[in-house]
Length: 465
Image (tube, rainbow, N blue to C red; front, side, top):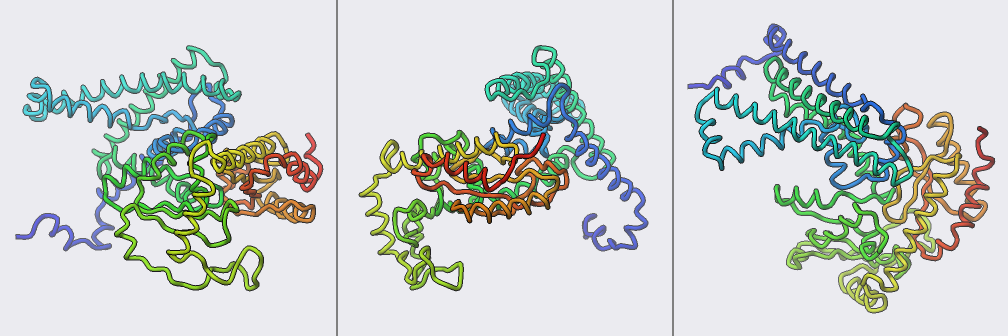
């Protein structure tokens, strides 16, 4: 006998769908509710300066913070009314379910049918409100403290009135989302809370993918601890591309998210290392290291030639590849003998100097009104845009500065990046051609005054107030 689902599937067609008035109403209601959810994610908490908040979030970007921000659909970085999302409800639901399994009285409620489930749902809501109050209070207090510590005050008038107002707003925002989820479940399609979470993730997906694809050019680190947790759950193999930057685990001045990623780098299944990026060896001495050496037998690299980026040879490229297994192993062994990979050693100090140089250049760009800084460099790559009336004008000026700097002996690079990296000052979305500099030599730190002077000269007169 065919099931009800089979019967529905056999009669499903566009003609029948056009007659399904009730289904169309449910679909439109669900879409409308999700639009309301997205609209609320752009309404900030009362007493918060959104422009300063954006700068603070860029400084603290990375790791678990980005993960929660993704689940909230970007509400956390905007500190909106629904910044907590539905996570307090999910936490409370887990706690109540565990308590019902461990406590006889609560366990008995589960056996009472609809009446018992209603009481458990009521306890879950009480727990949600309690968690919202606690999380909201610490979120408001932490925002005040972090702003004061960094010198950028995102709260207009700090104090208990702001904290109380923030807690009331956040509790109301989360409870409204729960109500909206219930309405979607009863009057729309699917589970409302699950759809709200999915809508938040989907809304952030383009930006997350863009950041992932641009990470190599901007020196950004992926949230490795969270990715490792996903591997434990789903059982996939994890490869780390550290052809550039892999040795930065030795540096002593990394930010917290980057340090957290480097500290767990040894847990991946395979990793690429490439010593030449810091001038330690000739071009092409890279190799792949496998956590399980037996896996390496499935891979073979016997090409006698390297890759080329142009039709003509130049000093950065050679005709013969030296990354065959034997040569790569000898090169890696020789490097470690000459420069041991230990924290506090000569190589580690060089890396720390490189990142210090990048931070100093980033600080100069932040102070100069002609430029728009991106996020703080995690390693030694600095990117910035040129201040202008539009993204097109900014791109044109960046190309002009690039050419002028090259004539003066300062070699930069150009990179087309999402305007979101720079806070989208033009409000138009899309991309902008930005300037990029990689400070991979420790000597460049002492040369920062000269580098900034050449950059300022190439940029021309500062904009008039």
